[in-house]
Image (tube, rainbow, N blue to C red; front, top):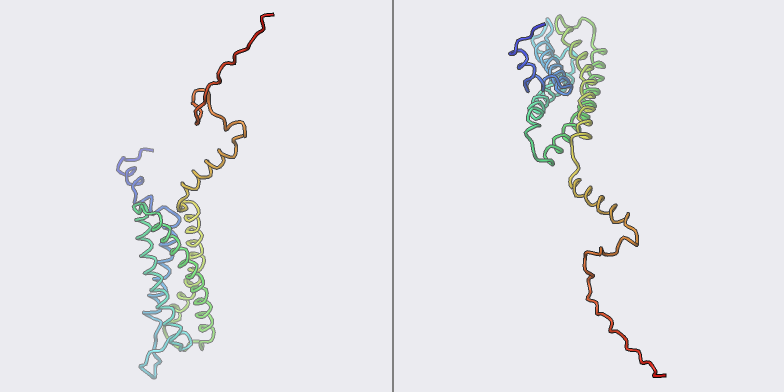
Length: 223
């Protein structure tokens, strides 16, 4: 099957290769899930009763539950955009300490977001379970979607933490590693030298001057 050169160049481009990375795919999914939670609760998460115009959270009338989900999803989405930009610029970062700092920050935040989404899922599910059935005409599907995608966010952020840890193990060099390796090689070479190998070569003069010994005269008797 013939593939045009333009499509080959597109498939081999840096953008396509970057999008095909597992870490990029996981981060995109994490951002999309966060955006879904944010949008569903912000649009239909607050409803009013037929007898009142005041808006209430559909999750057991608990404004804390809706506010927690909205703020959490918004921060998670912004964090995904930030680290997605840093991932695209990772090849241009030449400073070792800066790259290691970014990876450590990414790993720490990924682990934190796993805990936050787990707590958020349990909190939202508990409030939805306590909500009276058919209390609001609208908002039920939005609440269910927010709970579902809060749960889906947990394994996605776990995958991000795992992939970032792999990057730390493989790509992040240890400071002064080259110096330590050279010191280890020198120490090994010195250790392997035996006591007889400390002598000087015949072509190298000794470090101290030597004085030739004078010839001895022997007196012989005439007899």
